[in-house]
Image (tube, rainbow, N blue to C red; front, side):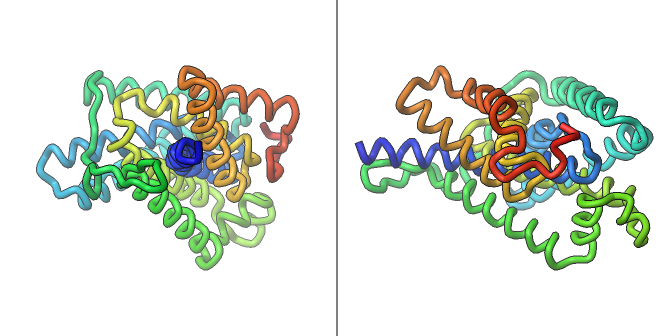
Length: 291
């Protein structure tokens, strides 16, 4: 029984780490624009698929990963400049509809470029499962959890120790006040999209050896990342991480003790439960009136 618990918890933490990265992307863009970026899942897909393509070209895996993250950032910055920035004075609903359109466009473009096939990256350090207390864990799961933890720490250092990060944080608290003290809020929104895309692409690359990737891989990961962001409290960075971990554990334990058939439904149940009973999320949404 103990080994079963450990197995389900390990699976849940692996998935939760990815959901936390995606949820952080939602929080970053929400704080900068007040809108929910439903194209966040597509940045995850672009990261994973780009890494597969670079690796197929003969690029070494570490360089392929770095190039894939860079490619996702470039795509996000182009989207912000072409689709989001011209409508920056529009209402929140308009911005959300634009991001949905962008997501559909990116998915269609990915289908044209990569086709409908399912692709996989090799494990970063082998495929031999690691046994512990009767449970088993793929080495890639350690990469996922470790990589996500490093990304969260780096994000915390960026916001806490750099002027650019503090400018983004100030904008998230009060956009008008930030403008009055000379912060370029347009540049903040531009950088926010790039940062959110980088986190999503890191998640897409880390999970590709376990869950594979395809042109439509971003749909479910994006929705689950959104559920994690809602659960933790939309706009809260700590809440995004907490929401991702909790959602991953709920999925892992639900799939193990109830049925794996309900695994994907758990995220949607969480969204409904949060909307009905805890609209501020576990740690409280910073701008719940905008949701």
